Image (tube, rainbow, N blue to C red; front, side):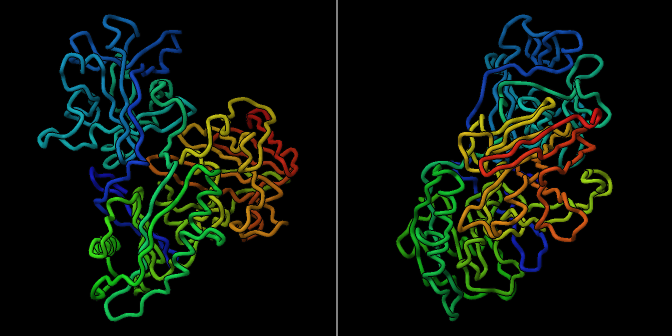
Length: 514
């Protein structure tokens, strides 16, 4: 999906099992926005080779972007502020330039390779906003590779790098040594997040087109606001550990006007619903989120959620809680999840490598992959701000690690193993969470650990690793005691050493030595 200023994507859960996309101009709600970080240094890993601190910095005149020894001249030359944008990128602002009253933001120059200072937002004559929006692809915690939004759209695989002449340049990620690509800073001390916390409000509308039978209102209301019923409100309260409290108002029998001749555009449905709400005396802009259930149409999708964003439309499926948990996931920045099937296996060892096949959906543990209303995985919870830093443990050494059951605040609930390309192996252990888990008590998912490849690039994509490739089903994908998962990309082997109801013992070893 291309990112354009003012536009955010919309994702669909399709009845036919296909993935499509759309866009809308609705802004991301304030609850999802992060705040400015800094000032702080941005250090190049290239300095480690000479045992020096090498900074991304401005020259003394404030006119050139340098990669040079820190601490020369004005300390502000080394300092940067990072301001998150609504589409998951950063504006990087040099403090020295700002103090001089000059345009302070790091941006692309006249060519793709060049890096210069300029305005933080386009003035209409100096190029797209995407030429000054930097995305961080984590290589490990606190360190990552910086990529421009613009180059990701027109020429993927370009990273901010240190040239042989100690200058900053946009260079090919694959052919440039990692030490010249990796940047460490307290501006990004942890993993990416789009916090969704505290009290949040929704205006829910059960709608129909003129002359058609209205949707039955009570099941729709219960599916969202119910307390003693599996509902979106209770789901959020449960999976967030009480950190999200959903409230709101419900309008029923809302007439959207004449039915369009073709499948209606979801954004237009939302605008019609907002207008109808105003006519009924409500102010939709006073709510954090607009939820619309329209009477069943000819559309081939069951629901659509703005991603990231603040509206959801269901297509006659608003009485199903899973429709809301899935589409809200899109609002929070969660893509449709995948499964990695058919990996090579021998003697209880499964290998992530060229033989594996990536299949969209077919992920029974995740509401984002066709998994009903199963609880959000650990990495979604971290991204939403529901897990603290001590509840996600990054593994950078061989050893056996304790993993608590998902929802146990006293233990790490996720282990992350860097794969060197900005993705991670994510390991979680889950116990049955009624009424949302769809599995029976004897499911392998409660008697093993779930391993996924996770990627965060503005949005989150999960890929379940099927560690039982000898069967066609993904319902036995968990890594069980005695089995080993090798990852050729990460050069690690992961083995489930032991398991009990309170947690798991996970052994991690470099596969170069195992």
